[in-house]
Length: 372
Image (cartoon, rainbow, N blue to C red; front, side, top):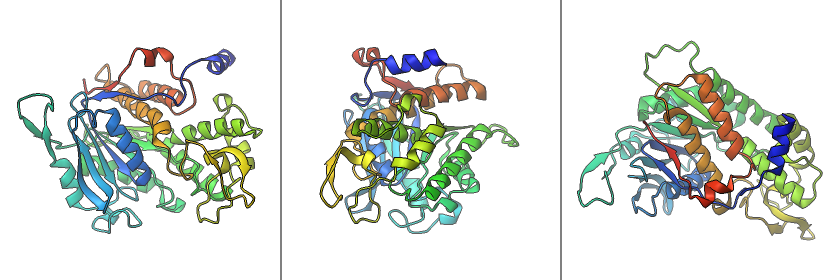
C-alpha cells in the first residue's frame, strides 16, 4: 500500500487541464437540476453533439433554460440526453409542477418527448434513415441535496427512483452520484446527514441483487460515482495552495476528510447571502476585502455549488464513460465483484486529483462505452 501511495504522489500527468472525448452506442440520460444541466451540456460536447450538430433542445423549463435535450446520434451512434428535475424520480411527484419548482415534479409529456424523439441514424450519411430513442440503456441521477432536504433523501426514495428508471425509461443500468460538500451544507449536522445519504447510496449499490427476483427485468446494475470524493480532492488541493494546514488528498482517508473538514470547510465568505460559499472552494487567495465578502476567484467553482465547466467537467465525463464501461465493455456477462472492482478503479482515477496519464492525452485516446 505504501508503494502505491508513493507512486500516486510522484506520478506525473494532467489533473484538470485536459478535455475528454467519448464514443458510445449507449443511450444515456442524465437527470438533475441546474448543476446537472452544466454537466450534461459538457457531456454532450464530449460525445460529439457540437461537432456533429446533433444536439436539440426538446423543451425549455422556463425561458432561456433547458428542460430536456437530446444528442442523437453521438459519436459512436448512441444518445446523450438531459432531463431537468429538482428531485428524485418518484410516482408521488407525477403531475406536480416541474423544474424549477421545488420537489421534482414531472409529466408523461416530458417522458414522451425524450423517448419518442426521432433522429438520423448517421448524421454524416447522405441516407436519411431515422430512428427513435425508444428506451435508455443507462440513467445517471444527481442526488439533489438542496432542492431536497436531507430527511427526504431516504433509502426508499432512492430505490424508487432506480426502479422507475426501468419502468418509465427502460434503463437497466443506473449511476447514482453521491452528495458532495457544497454551500447547501451549512452545519456539521448537515455534513453528517450527507454522509449518511452517501452510506445509503453505497449500500444500495452493493446489495442491489440481494432479495430481488426480477428474472432479468428491471435495473440490473447500480453503480456509484464518487462525486463527493472528487469535490473533496479538489477542495483539499486548493486549500493546500491557499496555505491551509490540510493533508494531500491523494493520501487522505475518509476519516481524514471528516476530521480536517470540520476545521476549515465552513470558513466562508461573509457576503451576506443565504448560501455563502466556502473560501477553499471558490477563492484563489485568502486575501479578502475588508468586510470579508469577496476574494479573487479561482476557476473551480462559480458559487460553491455550480462548477466552472471548462475546468471541472472533463473528469466527470471520463468517469461516467469509465463506469458504463465496467458494465458494457468486454465480456457480456460480468459478476458483481468484477464490476465493483472496476467501479473503484474508475472513481480512484477520475473522481480525484490523480494525474491523468500523459500518454492518454498525447495519443488522443477516446473514452469508449459500447453495448457489445
